[in-house]
Length: 166
Image (cartoon, rainbow, N blue to C red):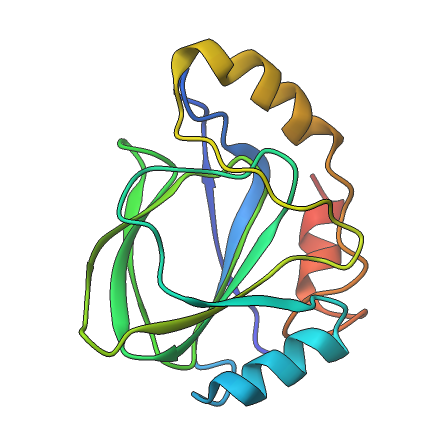
């Protein structure tokens, strides 16, 4: 199994982020939306949408999210305005812990991402990081259950090991 890259981000008073690391699996999947959907579904992350990443800072306080890049590439800023920009490209998968901000800074015209949430997740909310919602959002993030499996590597994958260590 290929080990994912890991990134952690501190809260900034608006976006809570998470002590759980963001996971980036490079060249982890076939660059085909149907194949990504099959892999995610087999690993208990039912595919929820095909689209891109919003071009504004946002996060989900009640669900973790998997982003499977099926076509093209994008530069995504993770962790809020003071976070880290990463280029993601076809074949990559990013697992975004609940509370971690993400914002599409730029993308190729052909970008297509498959989004998924664990099968034990609630319907994801969306927050833009207003200071007034921070405390309630951070409390929600702390209650989000760990996923039953890694969306790429399954039940014995890196996600459970890396996130259980936190």
